Image (cartoon, rainbow, N blue to C red; front, side, top):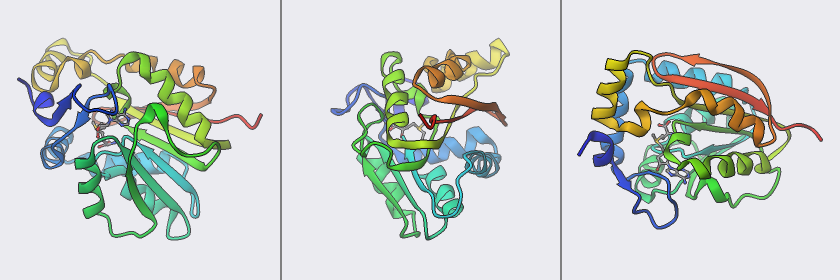
Length: 219
Ligand SMILES: C[S@@+](CC[C@H](N)C(=O)[O-])C[C@H]1O[C@@H](n2cnc3c(N)ncnc32)[C@H](O)[C@@H]1O
């Protein structure tokens, strides 16, 4: 059993085929170690790259422990709102306990069947969550993100960028699992475009993230 399996429910979660996180404290520890001190800077940069502005309504899909959600709450300020959703009641409870901002809330929910009405957010963000979905659910989840964004609304998807070195990939596979080590992050652009978005930008955030910025077309 590797670290990834230890932190997850595996496929046992009743609401999704996605790999859900069951142990928020363990996940936080793993996040801090894997980012080697660069996590605060990396996630602050993601919040900036999302283009969120004061008073925006933001959805964070697969929010986990709320690390990005809380940064989004800072970006939109008290006149905005941020909702984080995740199927795991454990991480949602952990995120709620660590959030002071009253305009930042959490619910259990799944990316492939969002409950929000059409066009109800200005910005949708999702970090390190797409690779947790089985391949057939990834396009469904991206279409849902497009549906709940208002026309002209912005999407930021960030996900794991496996290192090019085979040895490091092998170490990642052995420690956190082969889903991460073999993840085709280069397909993210196409996934986003096929869901109906206009891709506006892409890039890397050190040490492990690739991001894609996109907009829901006005028409
Ligand atoms: C690696 S964690 C990332 C958490 C957080 N976004 C971050 O960047 O730290 C992946 C998250 O995706 C969630 N997840 C798994 N299946 C999901 C689904 N069907 N819909 C939404 N989130 C899901 C997991 O429970 C987990 O919290």
